[in-house]
Length: 99
Image (cartoon, rainbow, N blue to C red; front, side, top):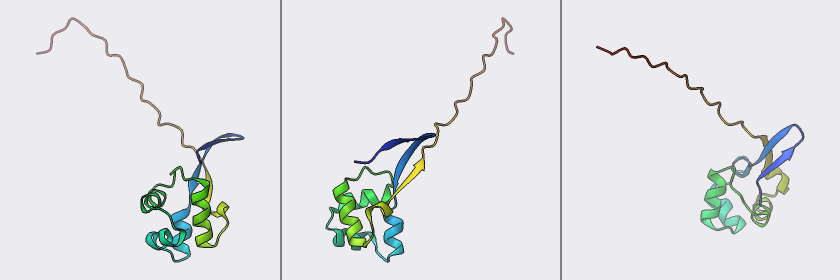
């Protein structure tokens, strides 16, 4: 299974390039699904979610159907840091009444 890996200098995530490679080779999602003999729901998840946790066996089937090495279907990308949280300012309360 795929996931996060630590790489010197920071965290990286693996991203699937199945859709890009398939389209470059003239495959549609359904054509690739049939050629690789993969469950439709699995193929849809891989096609629409580049961070899908696909098994090595599944990726091997896809790579063979596309005629590419399995490494062409994977890409390491830097993990984006979480968005910065805004600091909340405290507003001093006074005894003044608003009119």
